[in-house]
Amino acid sequence: MSSREKILQAISANKPAFMESPEMNIKGDGMDPAATLQQFIKTLEGIGGKALLVSDIDIIRNELKQSRDSSNYIVNTIALLGEVNNEINPALDANSLEPVYKTYIEATIGVAENGSVWLYESQMKNRLLPYICQHLIICLDAKRIVPTMHEAYQQIDVAKEGYGVFLAGPSKTADIEQSLVIGAHGARSLMVYLIDLDPTPDS
Figure 1 (tube, rainbow, N blue to C red):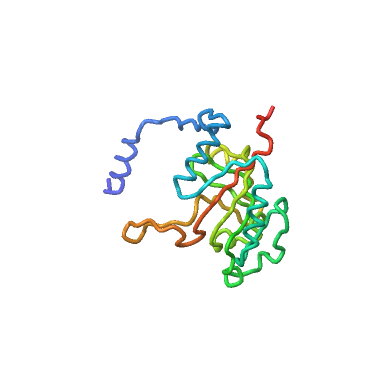
Figure 2 (figure 1 turned 60 degrees about the vertical axis):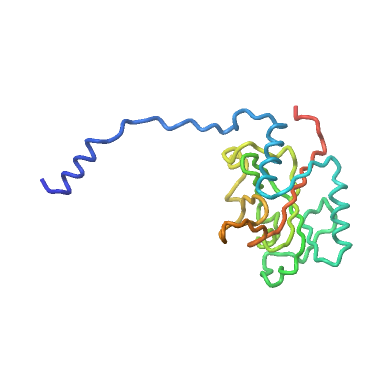
């Protein structure tokens, strides 16, 4: 018997006992909507972002208006907030988008366990936009927050468009001398407006 055959025979004789695959808890340990919401806020703030629960969308509209009164280049991609920047399209390159100071984008879903939000490419208008702006504003229906990534993947269609992303917090790195730097490779800040226009639970 060759050395190779002896090795393969030893491996075959010492296989570990068969074990059932663990059950996956897709529903996030039965977290109720209120707990899921609070967990999302806590996690997001723990990774450098901010979240604000609003019951009146005019709060966001007024914030957008005040931003546009400044001399900075403000981009809005959400029709519900008012005038949309129609000049933003997928063909624009980084040089064209570099002046963008603040961007407003709607998210599809939020994930409590890691504070991330899912963005389809059509919501971004241009896939560079969430990363090249200085400050990113995300608007998300407060009832569209799920406990885990497993549940999030059940509710999104990753093949729907050419690009989509789970985005969590502002850009940050600690590669240099273990010092945390915010905004090194993308937005310097992230604010998530959690819109709760109907505070009553779903029936």
